[in-house]
Length: 479
Image (tube, rainbow, N blue to C red; front, side, top):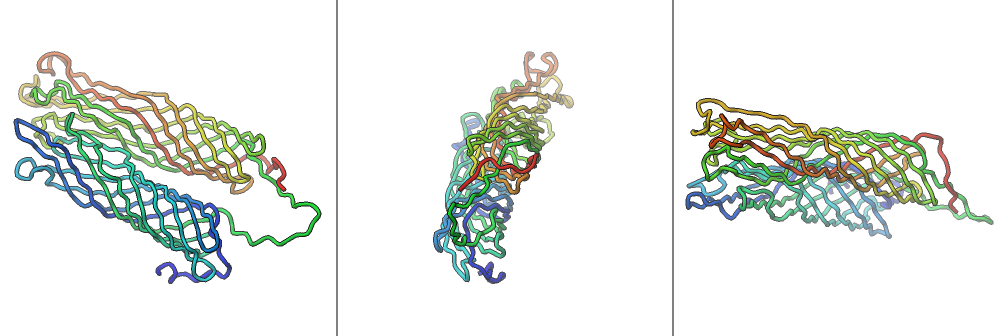
């Protein structure tokens, strides 16, 4: 095997017990379909089917725990990766009539899987294993018939095999194959009442390196004493500050309403439902205080601020038969919406197992949503059809919401903590409207323009390190 052939067996018996974290990267290839029940225009049905291959790379983080019983190793593992697995076709729909481009992109995915393996080789240093469980992916679809697009988190399943080998007491390398299937479901509408179903399945191959957090301990020597040995239990009480790196997925439903922009009654007042999603890396700082009580329970308060830029952009022609978002005689409308920062103030409540702590957290969240709306009406019949009639408006909405999540923290040393954390934030709905001049820009005269409404939701996965102030202390004695 590749890993076994490139590394020598460790001299001592290897233990796979305990928690570990790591990094991995790989490549995926698979297939995507787009299907709808057809758009009927002037008694002609335009079927929006598309079939094409997808492929691309990904990289991410891993966190897991193993339990070893003899040569058998059982474990649970979670991972999250940022990806660019993409595919497209230029001839979706009916090629002889309305052939148009369509595409699918997986830009992030995660899995939560069980593992079962068999430690083999000299001193049990090689671990072939089977794995399977749940998968979730952030899938984006596009249909060029009218420039419609949308994205959504999609649940699915995954299964595969792998091999892992130790090359140092706390370090191992792995090679893994996973099949990921996110099924088929509607994630956006071509026009109201015509949902577009997008499927995704892919085969992933990745390589990774893992670090076991606790060094393997030799079997303890038997000590004959009159009283049991006493060990100190560390204290979580005190102030701490730290920093985080991770990723954010922006979610929520959106709706655009291009009202009276197109004088053609077939397309006027066209509402399109979208999933206003976007992804971004984030960097954060945090500070907090913990109180440990009843030996195993920890209560705390924490505040943080993060910098990110999940962005959603939507653009379409005001006339269905135009090239999407091309500056031609039919005009177009455009939406760009993003959240550049977020702050939270949260309570925390955890259960400590010596140097490990599992906790839940929740509180208030604050963000600013920056949105740009633009529309250009040039179609014959508009009041200013002889030249560009381009109007732009920018909006900045400060909003308050709630946040909740959970995490796991490990006391690496008396003053240093590392953790992994998931947060979900919900800021409700933000609505912005760009009104055109009712006397000179609307046909017929009256209110017209572009309205955009979206729910603002953020899902965050991040990993952090903290420094705990104060001298090391003991909260209790453990016998």
